[in-house]
Amino acid sequence: MIKSLSVLGATGSIGVQALEVARLHNLDVVALTTNTRIDLLENQIREFKPKYAAVADEKAAAELKIKVGDTGTKILSGKEGVKECAALGTEAVLNGIVGIAGLEPTIAAINAGSKIALANKETLVAGGNLVTGLAKEKNVPILPVDSEHSAIFQSLQGCPEHSQIKKLILTASGGPFYGKTKEELKNVSLEAALNHPNWAMGAKITIDSATMMNKGLELIEAAWLFDMTPDKIDILVHRQSVVHSLVEYSDNSVIAQLGVPDMRIPIQYALTYPDRFISPVKELDLAEYATLTFDRPDYDTFKCINYCRKALEKGGLYPAAVNAANEKANELFRKGKIGFWDIPDSVEKALESTINSGTYTLDDVLLTDREIRKQTEAMWS
Ligand code: NAD
Ligand code: MG
Image (cartoon, rainbow, N blue to C red; front, side, top):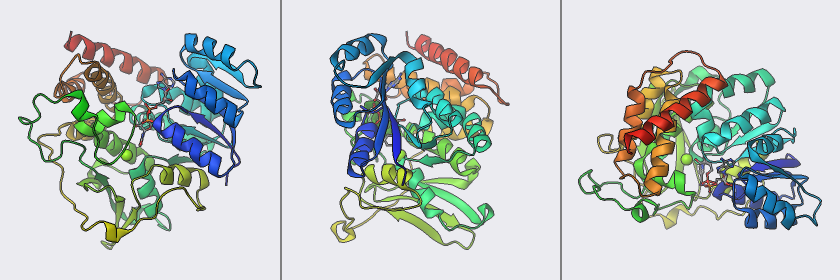
């Protein structure tokens, strides 16, 4: 198992659970980063005694510096500070940042040669080609933390040849609005959209689960992680979130990974792979679940999945564009500025924009991100 670890987005849902795993296995936590929640970060600094901590928000960083002046932790600030923490060359970097803000730190960590435990799916959605290309060049593994991708990764262990994989099947809980019609969901409140049936997560991904954009993002994430074309990735609604995803092989044998819905299993596996150790997670007692159900997604109502599939087919910067539109629209919905169904409409508009569908650089991704955010904002103001 790795001995040293940096946790980016340490104060978020994934970050806090990653630190629980680090605590259980006595890992040396070298760096921690956050955007704003410095009270929690202060507690984490006092417990894990990292060499470095970074706060993206400059003002909050200055406040934290005073609060933890009595500790040995060096406080860095701004986007650059977060990148510095990613680039320390620790054995592993766990990226639990939400959104495109995670892209440059991921690249910095790959360049420094750290193993990447990746929860930040937006990194692969917006910059899949860049990130996977660089990881190959530097011989750095990207280990999935997203539960579905961890399940696929686990189900692929022992697969001798990529060509023997027939398809990947991502499971989706269906979110809080499964089975509802667009009409029934006309005046969806933020509170209802934040009420996920199976997982307690950060606000952005919880809204992505309600629109099912999350599954669209995961489709793109899976394509890059496992080198699969979109036609070989299926989606199945599975309400109980026990079967975390499946792989179908050329002989029609299907292998899946199961467990109670708890992110600490995929977080830990990304850090301990190929080994397994005890975990704080409850045993799966299948008899507790009277039935496990499977169904096809309602693509007519939850259109974001189709938009992501199309973006992946179009290639180039289209995935970055749909991601940017979604991030902006998701934020506007959480601020009460737009309605629930304005989110898919924003994503559709990005897909219809004229953008580069060929090869791209990091600057191209960041520029497209900025432009599509502006376009989305203008759409609703
Ligand atoms: P969260 O909102 O709970 O936490 C996000 C973290 O990122 C926080 O520490 C925050 O301070 C930091 N952050 C936000 N903006 C930043 C910025 N501009 N610069 C630097 N740091 C910034 O989110 P989460 O639910 O933990 O999700 C994190 C990532 O993991 C997302 O990409 C999400 O899709 C993915 N993920 C989460 C879960 C889950 O169960 N929460 C499951 C699968 C995948
Ligand atoms: Mg997931």
